[in-house]
Image 1 (tube, rainbow, N blue to C red):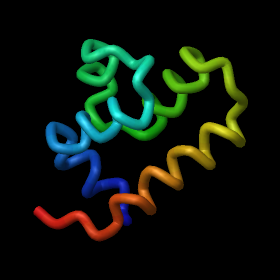
Image 2: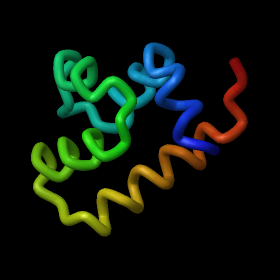
Image 3: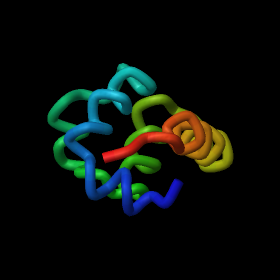
Length: 70
């Protein structure tokens, strides 16, 4: 999936991101607003994981929603 789809539909994906990364607050997710780099940085910070692990998780998130339609 192209990340632009997630970013452009962040209101719908925000809830799915919250399910995936439950430690992220609604305020943090609102601030991220679908920006992939901001999401990655926040995941690293909140979960204390490295960049490689964060990228694996985000790619898995993208893959799990690749069939999403508007």
